[in-house]
Image 1 (tube, rainbow, N blue to C red):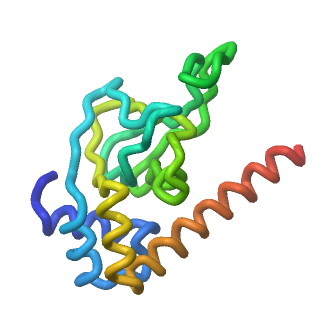
Image 2: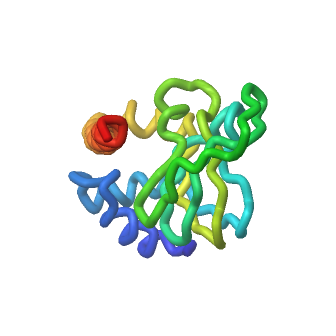
Length: 155
């Protein structure tokens, strides 16, 4: 999945880029790159600096709190969720600059659209309309997740 027009087509259908024009998507693609991860390859490791925003284009990724990390020793791994097409990981560190709060592991061969933190910041600083759309979309997803967790805690 290295063809720019194919990447643009895939990204244009994702919630994260809702409200972005075709020209916006083309520009976003120019700020990132596609990375292939093999089955069982670690994409992000808890406690380490996160490399940026990773948007899943194909494959499946597990996000979990590992049994052992630089700061924690748990009784076992804690499964948080499996990412599907269009989901993304790394947004917490992207926003606050702190180390990753969870592991992300490829469950099979995956293609991820990756934007480094530096490139992402340049993109949203130089193109406020794109930044506004992406941050609004991220916030909507974060709020939806928080509401789901609230419901789970109510049970």
